[in-house]
Image 1 (cartoon, one colour):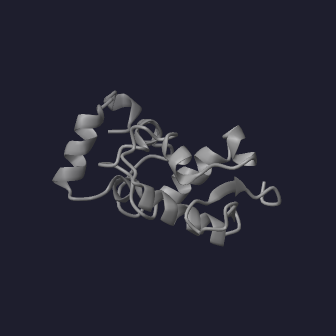
Image 2 (tube, helix red, strand yellow):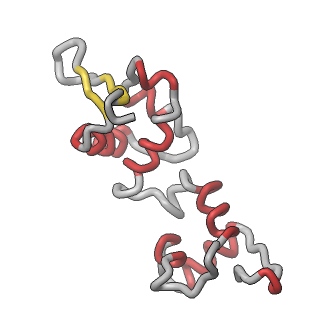
Image 3 (cartoon, helix red, strand yellow):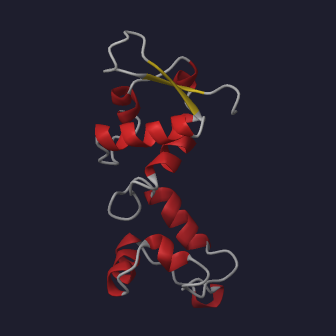
Length: 135
């Protein structure tokens, strides 16, 4: 599919058909040891970039922290801090739940990527900020 001489540019439906046919995730399909792809799977890379927030293809509890960290590091509001509900608004098409985002944010706090504050002292609403020492 990736060979230039084949000139095949499958759409997302075709990729989904392959995933279903082989009963694999996108990541399994593109891993070198599981698939014989060229050195630079350009179409698949573009597909992943364009569909990274499509739950059916990519989102799992393991991938959400990476998605959040990549998005939040670029967001200027993260220097001042954002709540879980504010962070959820950054991903309108991802169908993320507040529980998924909260759990992913906790992981990023444990990794010292984010700082978590409890301004009201009630342990009900936390403010998450980029850790300036990890930038």
